[in-house]
Length: 287
Image (cartoon, rainbow, N blue to C red; front, side):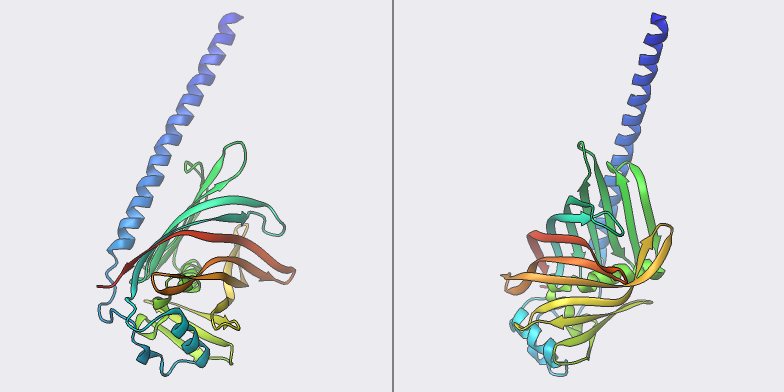
């Protein structure tokens, strides 16, 4: 029977080697796809024109927006064309409860386009991790998760509600690159009240509107969508969605938040699923 045991061990070792080989190949494909997405993101030329912030373009904006942008920017501020940043924090992997797991991420943003790519590593247990890509490029959204970057767990790509949801994310995160909220950069503002205003951004056929609420200091407190697509099993449900920003500081002459959280506002209550803070922030400015 020794030969049977030896054969079993050999077959098991061969299966493990094949699994590792396939995993390594899939990881290389993951890295290759990331490189291709980054190249596409950086290739987006966008419209030329305004290169520096002129306070004169704020004249017709709602009062709380004027106040915020005058705090966040100074006259002559070069416009942000790209951002590279790092994040760390926790993701809630439960759709209805609390199952928080640590994550680290790198994100690249192009304000001309517009577009972004979020590459994250979410820790699980025993050294296992899930790699996640979240992006908006050329009018299409992408959400891709793979165990160890090799075994696909979820993948969505295309237009419709997915693209709208990703463009919402780009707009909600604009306080990290606040010149993108200027009218000259394609955002239109509508007054709501003394503390709130609606921002609308269109990219081709994809258009989104978010409500910005400003705090006592005049900075962005929350950003809310009345309906964003939320994946529940195989179905997509629409639900209110909100981001909160805090820990404001000055980077490269601009006031930006370093921490925040994002949540679904469900009938059962607030379901927070992202809590994080920024590490590095590297801007690329207009000439």
